[in-house]
Length: 75
Image 1 (cartoon, rainbow, N blue to C red):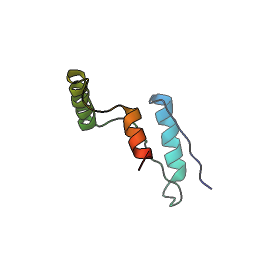
Image 2: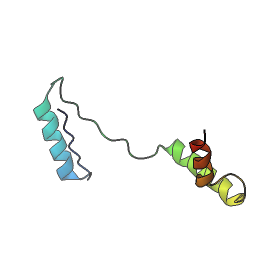
Image 3: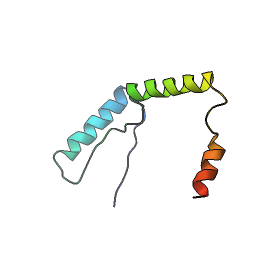
Image 4: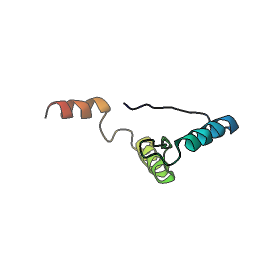
């Protein structure tokens, strides 16, 4: 059975709790502690901004999500 513990805040109390869990886990091979990578990398952020600017400058180019979705469903 797997369990997930989410600690959302990044403050002193959260850091203390994470440290306690790591200490209790020790070198256990069946316990993994991972930090979620929920944010965008700086490269992804730059690319999204670049694409957004293209859309703003060329609003009539491209296709809507509904058009793309319809094409995918019709395959």
